[in-house]
Length: 281
Image 1: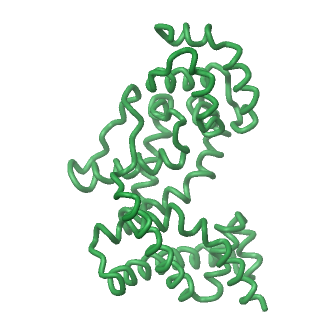
Image 2: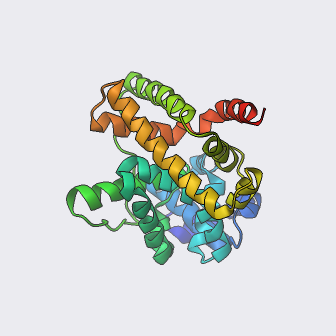
């Protein structure tokens, strides 16, 4: 590949333009220069040779990369979309990682990213999903802040993309996911009917809090409190089941909670549909 960003932009101008037109609808306020900069940085960090650049770029999470680029470019509309997409999943990951401190940790990361988004988001290269990258950064922040130096280590925009915490082998990972799924079923089944419905509407069907509240005929503030209680009860119930019935230690519990965050609620759509039908009948 060429020696710098200008060379990349010149050599791959047509490809950059084509990719830009394909994804610009995904990111309000996206400009081609910011998008091309992120593409070039990703190629450079991965050490991709010129003949392989097209295939490499088309294998990236381009809509996510476009959203990050629009945020870097200063688009407030893009930042609002970024927050809408990432805030609740990242808070859920924070609660799984750090318990009651998790939401504060996640919100602190958003604040750090917003204050220096022209540099911080440059670390995102598009090889993983934006949410996956954020979870990895959150985990790094948790380790740095609460287990060692009690502070966030600044992210180096020229360094490698942060990686997720070390994972067990595939067999152990599958076992953790299976345990988390069974425990999640138990925890969800124990929730009061209205909390089940709110979780269903808000997380599985993508309704706003106001829409979910209207469907269960409560005020929006009441629905917000119910969701908070449901999330707290879910985490506590999961922890209790994993410790009592599966005799897991704290680190094993943490891994299973992360498995529930990463895949549990998302794959419980079939359960939610059945539960909702039962509650409505």
